[in-house]
Structure formats: structure tokens, C-alpha cells
Amino acid sequence: MLTKQQIKETQKLLRDKTAQEIIKWALENIGVEKLAFASSLSIEDQVITDMLIKENKKAQIFTLDTGRLPQETYDLIQKTREFYKINYEILFPDEKDVEEMVKELGPNLFYDSIENRKKCCEVRKVRPLRRRLEKVEAWICGLRKEQSVTRHAIEKIEWDDTFGLVKINPISDWSQKDVWDYIKKHKVPYNKLYDKGYTSIGCAPCTRPIKEGEDVRAGRWWWEDPEHKECGLHNKK
Ligand code: SF4
Image (cartoon, rainbow, N blue to C red; front, side, top):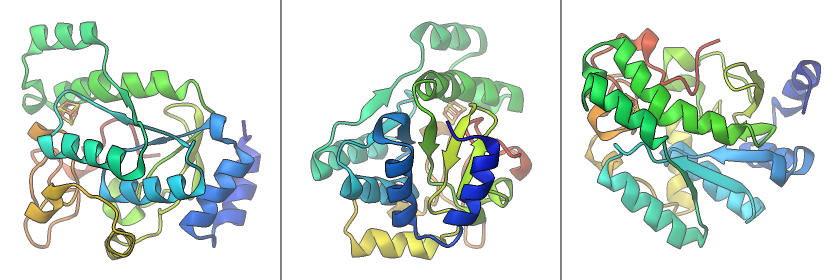
């Protein structure tokens, strides 16, 4: 695994590289077996899926099925599998954890408090992700700096304190327009909710379309303060 010092040196090396070059660098220098991509099926993650598969069809790609996803996201998983002829690895939360949580706090616990919302994200997303990331040395994410106040400081490669491994963000400096230009140019499949005013898509009960002028992630946990809007997968440093 890269040391923190090596990560600092690599940050300089990757600073001016394109996203495709960063992905190629990661596959060659970290290795297909030690590198995984966690796709949320967002437009950003669909761009990375396209780049990764074009670089190496054996790249490890997985997604989290929280059990509360919109039907349109399941449709996209199906479509992407067929489009690229790949089998996603789909992670599920521990059934007992979900049963206990819902029994104690109810199925819509996330609306009751930030604490409950974070508990739901912990059970349905963070724990399955942690179990999967223990098997690799680095993960790729589709985070972009301009997505929200919680993401302004991200680097193309950095140490992930939350999960204890290297994190690679190949499109961290892309704009939303860059993402859409790529999607259209390469005819990449995308979630149809984007055509209905959604700009960031998570679980169905925690996502809604945004209004004009709002931050792209304003439709996620819209009832909370922007400073709290991460699910535990990408905590602010
Ligand atoms: Fe639960 Fe909402 Fe988090 Fe999904 S986004 S895991 S439903 S709190």
C-alpha cells in the first residue's frame, strides 16, 4: 500500500493528468486486484465506469444496494450490465442490522434526526462498504470539488482516513458540464431521473429534484444543513 509520503509525491505527478491517464496509472501501479471502484450509478460514476472498462474489462466495479434505491437506479444497473457486458458486484447491508434498526426506530427513521439518518447510512452503506474495502488497497470515487461545500478540498489521490486506504478521485476537477459532455459524446447510459430535475441521486426517500439556482446536492437530505450532508462514505477532512 502507498505510504502517506508516496501519496504526497503522487499528488504532484497526477495533478495535471487527465482522468483517463489517472485511471490507467492506478490500474498499472496499484493493480487490478488491489483496486476497486465503488459506483453509485451517478453520471460521474458512469463516466468512470466507461473509462475503467475501456482500460481493463477485469476492473473491479461494485455498487451498494441499500434496499431503498429508486426503481430508475435498478433500471440503470440492468442497462449498464447489458451495455458493457459486465456483472456488477452488488453489496447488500447485513439483514440483521437492518431488521434491528427498523424494529427499534421505524422504516423512515432518517427524517427524525441527523443521528438517525446517519445510523441508517451507517447500516445500509458504510458497513457493507467497509467490509468490501478491507479486501483492497485503493478505491476509485467519482467525487468532484464543485459538488458541495463538503468536497472542496479533495485531491486526485489522497489518504482516506475513514476506511484506511488510498482514495483516487480522477474527475475531482471536472465541472458538471464536463461530465455531461462525456456522457453524450460516448453515449454512456445514465439514470433517467436526471431528466426529471434530479442532479444527485441516492436512496429514494432521501433524494428529490432541485430548484433552479440550488447547489447540485441540495436535493439530498434536503431537510438538513449543507454542512452535514455526507453519508459517512466521504467524510470531510
Ligand atoms: Fe438510509 Fe437515506 Fe442514507 Fe439511504 S440515504 S441509507 S435511506 S438515510
